[in-house]
Image (cartoon, rainbow, N blue to C red; front, side, top):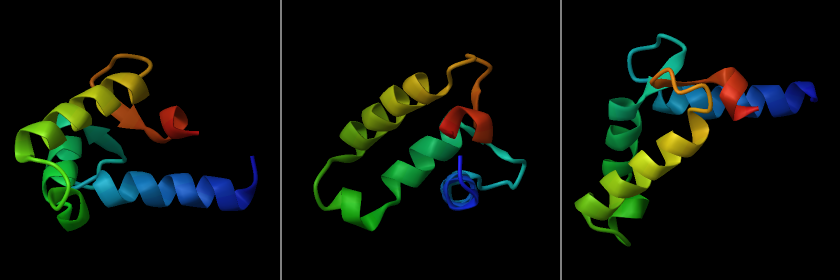
Length: 73
């Protein structure tokens, strides 16, 4: 993996990590989806919540309740 790819993965994680603990909880991901203005123009709040839950389940590969950098890369 290149330095740029790692940097992009870190940026994606940081954008969703509201409390700065280095990982993303389901609640943080739902909040990110629901409050995204661009997504709001295409999807209902309940659709966005469901999309966040599905994405979280796919990305939380170790099933510890958090998405970490290692799961994004």
